[in-house]
Image (cartoon, rainbow, N blue to C red; front, side, top):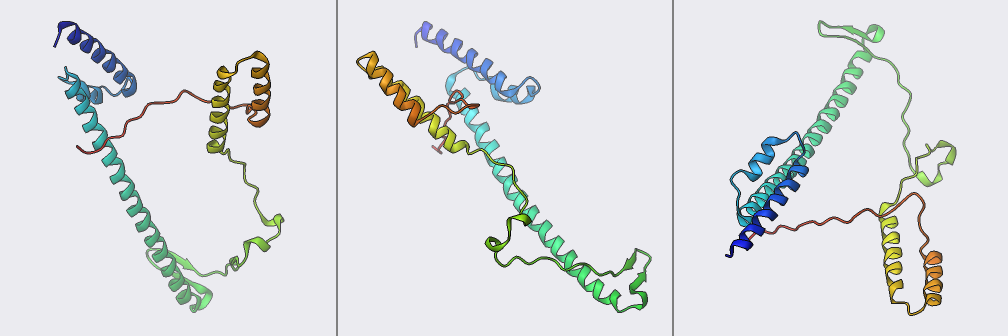
Length: 195
């Protein structure tokens, strides 16, 4: 390897490390130290990045699975508590005054209004619906703005100014700009597959 290539590689590596510092944030020195400690060549640096990404993604997946298990457990506990309340209510309802005093708690049975059972949502009048805030369709906006941007970039192929103006009029009609929205800068991502 030539000395200039090594120098360029070192400069690029220093630039990558500076960029990495900006990604880690100012407060996560341990993460940054773990990522760059002793890494002086590109292959080892990239290997370390891949290792950290794979561990973080595996941890995220594990947390998602654990959250689902917790949600399932919470649901089972709520259902059990509901069934036990129903059973307790049926017992206390038969007692004088529908009341029972226990050392753990004072239990009183009371009547509750019947709950609603929806049989056909489409038949329910609009007066009984709660209005929802509108939600932006970012996918459609992105698709529209990307197509507009592509069409505008194709204006460079027009041979005359008249052709360019006519084409721009068509673009503004077919793909009008969307007020209050613009496209951000695209990002570069990586796909990591096992070796």
